[in-house]
Each structure stands twice: as structure tokens, then as C-alpha cells.
Length: 53
Image (cartoon, rainbow, N blue to C red; front, side, top):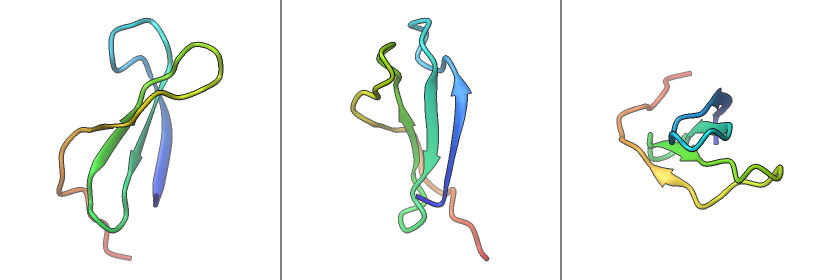
């Protein structure tokens, strides 16, 4: 991952989620929070988020 950010509740379940970008594929990934400090299975949420360094 090249970028990961705590983004708040993106899934609508009242729990904080994490957003990340996979550097190689450019996919935007949402990792839903489970409410116990752990993250659930990632959700692929689009592509084209590649970064040129």
C-alpha cells in the first residue's frame, strides 16, 4: 500500500473504516472497521488511483 487513511464511516454501519490505495494496481480499497480494533475483509472500490512519484 502506498497510502492509508482513517476516513470515518464509509460503509454506513457506524464504525470507522480505513481507505488505502494499492500502489501497484491503483485500486482504491476500503477496509471496514469491525468495532473491536480489527478490520474486515477489504472491499475493492475502483481503479485508476495510481501515483507517479
